[in-house]
Length: 293
Image (cartoon, rainbow, N blue to C red; front, top):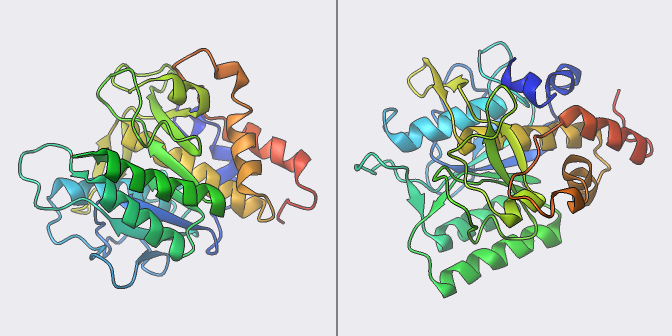
């Protein structure tokens, strides 16, 4: 079974490739913007902000950002999932390419908050965040919570990877009521042991493919990775395709179709697997005139 088939994204991908007016904010590492499988017209840098293009294609930050960008915005037929290549991808790096310890790049809460505000100011309708938060404090976490509150007021959906430490609990990101946290499932439809879990993740989150996902490598060769960072863009891409199909839907409509009311998951720390086609069918019945032709 392919990753797209696991979450029933294939029929939605077959229907459309997204709309340019659906802007996705990619808050991650820089991206190999000159990659032959990325369209420079649709993958853009936020003007006046840190360079979106990689300076070192072998840096972990560049590899990570390019891999996630490929899941969302690679050309169809590239070998990457290429969920919504006709949507606009706004690349806002927060990871430094200078990380030398081999660990996952991280960002301070205030840096992430600033990136969120900038993506919203540029018209992003959905954000994809795969970030470990470093050096949190009460004041800086409050800045991040304020930024997430703004997303809720503006109707911008935010997808966050739950993390890969195999812990039970939450962070300032995953416990926010507007956020959709994402854990990894394997291709047999089973939650993976490395995913962080918790009450807020089980209640409001989703599962998506995070096992052996192939996408774009920054050096031009395919790259296969796993984890919640690989899983999150499947949910983000589903949001983007659904909004492309139903441009009149609200953020609440999309979230309800994808996540349900949350009641059935209130007593578990494990969220259910995304079912993108079921969400499409729910919206088809709920949004008058929403279906595109």
